[in-house]
Length: 439
Image (cartoon, rainbow, N blue to C red; front, side, top):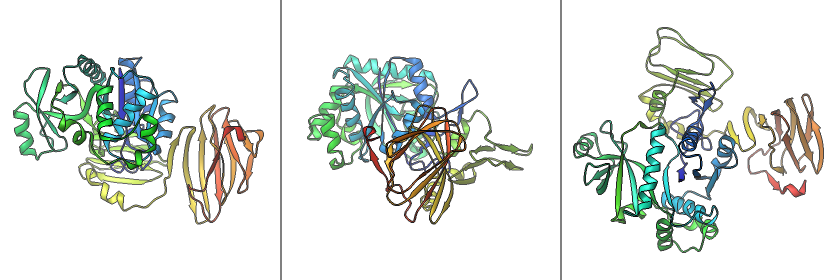
């Protein structure tokens, strides 16, 4: 089974846990059998591999999310990187070309496209496997998954099937309606359009070549910023007469807001928090090293992270985005391919960060021209390279890097450091990367 997971989103509706580079799918909020927590992307990836251990999984995403993906899923997962945002048709065309030209998937094989962040159980991926098999039959050029609706939602588009059989031809598509119109659609057997569909690789490759002048994946990648922004629905679905839909009646939730996310939390509190016995319907997610006490609250979500603190009525939390849009703030926490960092203090000419490197991982070899840096190792062991010279470091070691010094660090065990950046112009653009061979 070949699966393309679409991973996008700006993370504004789940502030303060999410930000521009840490979207909702990377928040570790679901408790696992061993007592740890996993994110939506980890949960979905685990479920896919449980249903089909040999599945080829490719995540179509932006450059900003690549580090978090590798941090949470490892280096073996396929990643199709969009150089810039161009909507779903260019993203799917690029990922399809990646599968064919880079991963070597034959053009007559089927692939399923689905969002990276639905809250589902394993029967969903069993259904996706059947969807993929149905596309392989060639009865239709596109096979969609239609979700059996549980209420007249105004958030989703609707698929009207021609029959009530498990697999049916599609009669029509309907845009997101109001609640009354949604009730009318459902009475006619309509299904939610969850954005899940299957096709043979050569079908989308041919469509891409019809609409875009390119030779292969690398050529398409190089001219990606010149492509017209257009959705897959407008570019392909609305013009395709041979479409089928398969029904899915299992659990399926879009956890896009705090209100819906808290409904799927296994427990009311994650992190250091206490609720007194007069609280009702209260959920707390606390990523800070300070306690939270809630008393006498009803139907409230409390979330605290380095980005900020949210205290909201659950229903009102759905309307958070315009308020977050007004906040102009530096990213305070991010997961990288090598580990993570958390900003501890921001001053006019200094920035203090706690850096955690995973065992065996290291930063890019790089330098800064407009700032000095100091590393203070607080736990673990590693190897530091300064201008090509290596040295072992451990707890209590202090490493100074003047502006222009090439430097990197590799963790032998989990390595934690306090990094202090000093300078008048401290920003993410002041970084020059070097090849490993330059060390």
